Amino acid sequence: MTKTIDYFFGIGSPWAYIGFDALVELAARSGAEIRPYLIPLIVENGAIYSRDRPDARRAYWMKDLRRWAALRGKPLDFTNRSALSDPTPAGFLVLATQLDGQDWTALARALQHAFWGTAADIGNADVRKAIAEAAGFDGAALEARAALPDIAELWSSNRDVAKEAGVFGLPTFRYEGELYWGQDSLPFLERHLRGEKLVA
Image 1: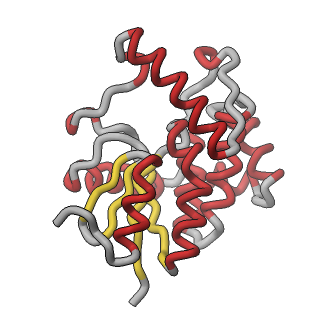
Image 2: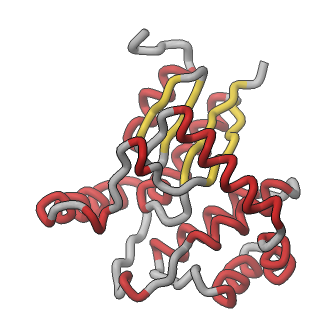
Protein backbone atom coordinates (compact mmCIF):
# COMPACT_ATOMS: atom_id res chain seq x y z
CA MET A 1 0.00 0.00 0.00
CA THR A 2 1.34 3.43 -0.96
CA LYS A 3 2.13 5.73 1.94
CA THR A 4 0.49 9.14 1.62
CA ILE A 5 1.70 12.36 3.22
CA ASP A 6 -0.89 15.13 3.35
CA TYR A 7 1.06 18.35 2.82
CA PHE A 8 -0.55 21.60 3.98
CA PHE A 9 1.42 24.57 2.68
CA GLY A 10 1.36 27.95 0.99
CA ILE A 11 3.59 29.58 -1.61
CA GLY A 12 3.84 32.60 0.70
CA SER A 13 5.30 30.57 3.57
CA PRO A 14 9.10 30.88 3.87
CA TRP A 15 9.21 27.74 5.98
CA ALA A 16 7.41 25.77 3.27
CA TYR A 17 10.00 27.06 0.79
CA ILE A 18 12.94 26.15 3.01
CA GLY A 19 11.69 22.63 3.70
CA PHE A 20 10.15 21.78 0.32
CA ASP A 21 13.06 19.90 -1.25
CA ALA A 22 13.73 18.04 1.99
CA LEU A 23 10.11 16.86 2.00
CA VAL A 24 10.22 15.75 -1.63
CA GLU A 25 13.45 13.85 -0.97
CA LEU A 26 12.01 12.23 2.16
CA ALA A 27 8.91 11.11 0.28
CA ALA A 28 11.05 9.59 -2.47
CA ARG A 29 13.24 7.73 0.04
CA SER A 30 10.18 6.45 1.87
CA GLY A 31 8.20 5.40 -1.18
CA ALA A 32 5.51 7.88 -0.20
CA GLU A 33 3.16 10.03 -2.23
CA ILE A 34 2.67 13.70 -1.36
CA ARG A 35 -0.94 14.86 -1.45
CA PRO A 36 -0.85 18.69 -1.59
CA TYR A 37 -3.26 21.00 0.20
CA LEU A 38 -2.53 24.61 -0.66
CA ILE A 39 -4.07 26.72 2.11
CA PRO A 40 -3.82 30.05 3.93
CA LEU A 41 -2.91 30.21 7.60
CA ILE A 42 -5.81 28.98 9.73
CA VAL A 43 -6.18 31.83 12.21
CA GLU A 44 -9.16 30.19 13.96
CA ASN A 45 -6.84 27.33 14.95
CA GLY A 46 -4.18 29.65 16.37
CA ALA A 47 -2.08 30.78 13.41
CA ILE A 48 -0.42 34.19 13.74
CA TYR A 49 0.77 36.14 10.71
CA SER A 50 4.37 37.34 11.09
CA ARG A 51 3.25 40.96 10.76
CA ASP A 52 1.11 40.53 13.89
CA ARG A 53 3.88 39.15 16.10
CA PRO A 54 5.76 41.22 18.68
CA ASP A 55 9.04 42.78 17.52
CA ALA A 56 11.18 40.44 19.62
CA ARG A 57 9.53 37.38 18.12
CA ARG A 58 9.79 38.79 14.59
CA ALA A 59 13.50 39.43 15.07
CA TYR A 60 14.07 35.87 16.22
CA TRP A 61 11.91 34.56 13.36
CA MET A 62 14.10 36.37 10.81
CA LYS A 63 17.30 35.02 12.34
CA ASP A 64 15.94 31.50 12.52
CA LEU A 65 14.82 31.66 8.88
CA ARG A 66 18.36 32.61 7.87
CA ARG A 67 19.85 29.78 9.93
CA TRP A 68 17.58 27.16 8.39
CA ALA A 69 17.93 28.57 4.89
CA ALA A 70 21.71 28.31 5.19
CA LEU A 71 21.42 24.77 6.53
CA ARG A 72 19.15 23.74 3.66
CA GLY A 73 21.17 25.64 1.04
CA LYS A 74 18.28 27.96 0.17
CA PRO A 75 18.83 31.62 -0.79
CA LEU A 76 16.69 34.20 1.01
CA ASP A 77 16.06 37.74 -0.23
CA PHE A 78 14.18 40.09 2.08
CA THR A 79 14.62 43.11 -0.20
CA ASN A 80 11.58 45.43 -0.19
CA ARG A 81 9.20 42.62 0.75
CA SER A 82 6.50 45.01 1.95
CA ALA A 83 6.10 46.20 -1.66
CA LEU A 84 5.38 42.71 -3.00
CA SER A 85 1.84 41.74 -3.92
CA ASP A 86 -0.18 39.00 -2.23
CA PRO A 87 1.30 35.68 -3.45
CA THR A 88 -2.02 33.81 -3.09
CA PRO A 89 -2.80 33.91 -6.85
CA ALA A 90 0.45 32.05 -7.47
CA GLY A 91 -0.90 29.21 -5.38
CA PHE A 92 -3.92 29.03 -7.66
CA LEU A 93 -1.57 28.21 -10.55
CA VAL A 94 -0.20 25.32 -8.52
CA LEU A 95 -3.74 24.13 -7.84
CA ALA A 96 -4.36 24.23 -11.59
CA THR A 97 -1.36 21.99 -12.28
CA GLN A 98 -2.52 19.61 -9.56
CA LEU A 99 -6.05 19.30 -10.93
CA ASP A 100 -4.81 18.82 -14.49
CA GLY A 101 -2.25 16.16 -13.61
CA GLN A 102 0.83 18.27 -14.28
CA ASP A 103 3.96 18.41 -12.14
CA TRP A 104 2.76 20.65 -9.30
CA THR A 105 6.04 20.19 -7.43
CA ALA A 106 8.05 21.78 -10.25
CA LEU A 107 5.82 24.84 -10.39
CA ALA A 108 5.61 25.20 -6.61
CA ARG A 109 9.40 25.02 -6.38
CA ALA A 110 9.85 27.65 -9.10
CA LEU A 111 7.35 30.06 -7.56
CA GLN A 112 8.69 29.61 -4.03
CA HIS A 113 12.25 30.20 -5.19
CA ALA A 114 11.22 33.31 -7.11
CA PHE A 115 9.30 34.75 -4.16
CA TRP A 116 11.71 33.91 -1.35
CA GLY A 117 15.00 33.46 -3.15
CA THR A 118 14.85 36.49 -5.46
CA ALA A 119 12.01 38.65 -4.03
CA ALA A 120 10.05 38.41 -7.30
CA ASP A 121 6.55 39.87 -7.20
CA ILE A 122 4.63 36.66 -7.93
CA GLY A 123 1.38 38.41 -7.09
CA ASN A 124 1.79 40.07 -10.49
CA ALA A 125 0.29 38.00 -13.31
CA ASP A 126 3.03 38.84 -15.83
CA VAL A 127 5.73 37.83 -13.36
CA ARG A 128 3.92 34.56 -12.61
CA LYS A 129 3.52 33.74 -16.29
CA ALA A 130 7.24 34.32 -16.93
CA ILE A 131 8.20 32.07 -14.02
CA ALA A 132 5.82 29.35 -15.21
CA GLU A 133 7.18 29.58 -18.76
CA ALA A 134 10.77 29.31 -17.52
CA ALA A 135 9.77 26.20 -15.55
CA GLY A 136 8.37 24.57 -18.70
CA PHE A 137 4.66 25.38 -18.35
CA ASP A 138 2.27 27.33 -20.54
CA GLY A 139 1.97 30.44 -18.37
CA ALA A 140 -0.99 32.00 -20.17
CA ALA A 141 -2.93 28.73 -20.14
CA LEU A 142 -2.27 28.27 -16.44
CA GLU A 143 -3.46 31.78 -15.66
CA ALA A 144 -6.68 31.14 -17.55
CA ARG A 145 -7.13 27.77 -15.85
CA ALA A 146 -6.50 29.25 -12.40
CA ALA A 147 -9.41 31.67 -12.89
CA LEU A 148 -11.99 28.89 -13.29
CA PRO A 149 -14.45 28.19 -10.44
CA ASP A 150 -13.15 24.72 -9.56
CA ILE A 151 -9.81 26.22 -8.52
CA ALA A 152 -11.43 28.54 -5.98
CA GLU A 153 -13.57 25.63 -4.83
CA LEU A 154 -10.48 23.47 -4.25
CA TRP A 155 -8.80 26.30 -2.31
CA SER A 156 -11.87 26.58 -0.08
CA SER A 157 -12.16 22.82 0.32
CA ASN A 158 -8.47 22.55 1.23
CA ARG A 159 -8.96 25.17 3.91
CA ASP A 160 -11.94 23.29 5.34
CA VAL A 161 -9.94 20.04 5.46
CA ALA A 162 -7.04 21.80 7.18
CA LYS A 163 -9.27 23.51 9.74
CA GLU A 164 -11.03 20.26 10.58
CA ALA A 165 -7.69 18.47 10.92
CA GLY A 166 -6.38 21.03 13.42
CA VAL A 167 -3.81 22.58 11.11
CA PHE A 168 -2.79 26.16 11.89
CA GLY A 169 0.72 26.94 10.64
CA LEU A 170 2.61 26.19 7.45
CA PRO A 171 3.92 23.82 6.46
CA THR A 172 2.13 20.99 8.24
CA PHE A 173 2.42 17.32 7.33
CA ARG A 174 -0.14 14.63 8.15
CA TYR A 175 0.58 10.94 8.05
CA GLU A 176 -1.80 8.29 9.38
CA GLY A 177 -3.78 11.05 11.09
CA GLU A 178 -0.76 12.48 12.94
CA LEU A 179 0.15 16.14 12.39
CA TYR A 180 3.71 17.44 12.19
CA TRP A 181 4.00 21.22 12.12
CA GLY A 182 7.02 22.96 10.63
CA GLN A 183 9.77 21.88 8.29
CA ASP A 184 11.93 21.21 11.35
CA SER A 185 9.55 18.35 12.25
CA LEU A 186 10.53 16.34 9.16
CA PRO A 187 12.77 14.02 11.25
CA PHE A 188 9.71 13.01 13.29
CA LEU A 189 7.73 12.41 10.10
CA GLU A 190 10.59 10.32 8.75
CA ARG A 191 10.57 8.11 11.83
CA HIS A 192 6.82 7.68 11.54
CA LEU A 193 7.17 6.69 7.88
CA ARG A 194 9.63 4.01 9.02
CA GLY A 195 7.13 2.72 11.58
CA GLU A 196 8.89 4.34 14.54
CA LYS A 197 6.19 6.72 15.74
CA LEU A 198 7.56 8.33 18.92
CA VAL A 199 4.30 9.23 20.67
CA ALA A 200 1.20 7.07 20.67
